Structures are given as structure tokens and as C-alpha cells.
Length: 310
Image (cartoon, rainbow, N blue to C red; front, side, top):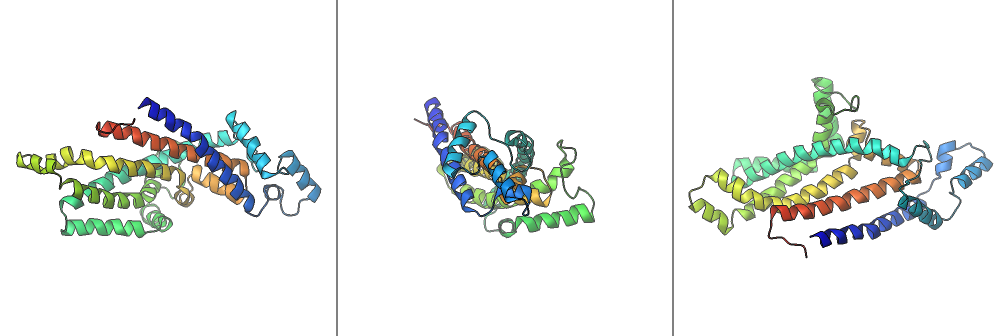
């Protein structure tokens, strides 16, 4: 197991290099100039060229790429061209906010998705099953931005139960986080419900489930003690991958609710062609995906001791 973890950690290096390489290539293919964005369209050409030279933007992209790699190895992600704030310091402020939002979303969606999926499988082909799958199909098909605005209209503007946007003083607040978390996790909850139902239907056909029932065990014991453990092995994979996706893909939700997180930060940087911020965010995002994948593999062994990594 230890050797497997070491091999996976070593694989992080080529993955990050590949992601950063593609990021630099794509950003240089996009029209626009961060210096012009910084100084304005009517800035003097001589000043623009001088600033470009000071920021080393007049060098070929591959030279900038290798210089960025050397700085990154020293733990320096550079400074924003627009705000002149260190990317590392900005990420220290933005990432915890997105982590709070994604964690709340994954908790809500996991509880709802797994329970609905199990109930739907138990009551297969009944009105309960049809209602649950209709619910799932609705939320899978519903655009996040539309659902978020509907929640704001109902619970913030009409009922006045929650704030319209923002995260208050920065501390954890259920009133501020509940609507963004539900919005962000709604589609995953629906997908997880359908996936859990499918896996549970396969599990309850197994011999050990029939054996447990033949012993006279209560149905809840059979399902939640004997069936759920085996259902959770593939479900954990989906949860782990979607948690990484929520951390990296919460752009729409953060924009709708004015949540000062990682997603809004990188979108703003892309609009302004702030290369340092984009590269830093991509690097951190790729790192999150790799480590969450590793954690999922380790959890596999905890849930099922039969799984071994040689």
C-alpha cells in the first residue's frame, strides 16, 4: 500500500507539468493583452511595451513557461498582473470559502442522493420509485443558474429567511451557505440518487442478501447493514470525483450568490488574461483532483479489505 501511494504521488509531477503546459499554450492562443487590460485601451504604446518588458511578457511563451515552473518549484506562484496581489495569498483567502461551500453541498447531496436511491430501489416500480426518479430527472435537467435564482426569489426575496448573496462576515453561517450549497449540490444529489438506485438493485440480488433474509433479519438490517456497505464502494468513487468537481466547478453558484471563492477568482482572471492567476488556479485545481483520487483509492481499502494494491 505504501509503495502504491508513493507511485501515485510521483505521477503528480508529469500530470501537473502537462496541465500547466496546455494552459500556457491555450492562453496564448486567446486574443487579448493583460497589459492593455491593466492600463486601458488608450494607454501609450511605449508605456505598454515597457510594462510588458518589466513583467517578462515580451518573451516567448515557452520561456515564460519554464520560468514559471522554476518559480513554482520554489513555492512562488507569482503575482496578479491586475491587482499585484500574490496568487498564493489570494488562494489562501478564496480556497477556504469554496471548500466550505463544496463541503456543505457534498454533505447535503450525499445524504439526499443515497437515501433517495436506496428508498427508490427498495420500492422498485412503485409510485415512490417513479416519484424519486422524476425528482432526479428534474434536477439533472435543471440549469444551476435558474435553480439558484428561483431559490433566491422564494427564500430570500419572498420569505426573507436567508440573505440574497454573500457570506456575511466570513465565518460559517448556515443562513448564508444553505441556498448556495443546495444549488451547487442539487444536480449531484439527483445523479447520485439514480446511481445508488442502480447499484442497490444489483446488490439486493446477491446471494448473501438472500441468505440474510432467510435468517429472519429485519429488512432495514439487511439493507443498511449488509447491502449498504457494498453499495458504498462504487458510490464513494462518484462522491470523491464530484467533490473535486464541486471545488473546481462552483463558478455559476459563486457568481449567482456573490460568493467570494475559487471559481469566481479564476473566471475573473480569464476575462482579464491574468496569466499568473490562471496558471496558479489551474495548478491548484489539478492538485486537488489528484489528491482526492488518491484518497478515494485509500478509502476503498477501508470499506473492502479484499481490495489490495500491489
